[in-house]
Image (cartoon, rainbow, N blue to C red; front, side):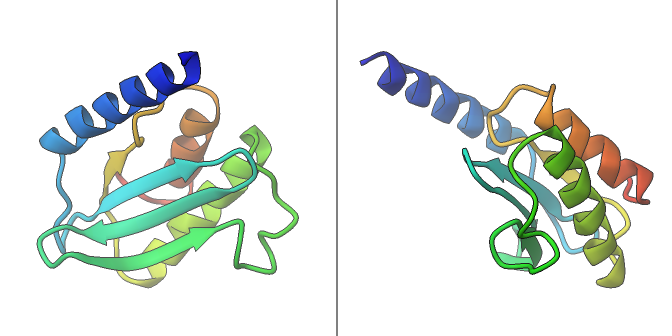
Length: 119
């Protein structure tokens, strides 16, 4: 019962954030998702309804050794920024996915900024 309430509150935060931010071709939405074992980052053009590029700890052989902790978030943030810069993306809108902006989320965002992305 308690975890169900926590998930409902997180979903409400996610919807509240998504009402305010949208991604475009010039400035896509950088959406992050943390599970207990993996980290997923997508760059989404909401106007066209397409994912421009995505990176996670699931598919990449270089990212397979990473786990869903602060160190893994830093590495994925750097890799995601390099992937976005290769596609010509320099500015993004950050979508934290209903999570609080500290810990893993902050580490990922700071690493992406250091790698060259503008938020």
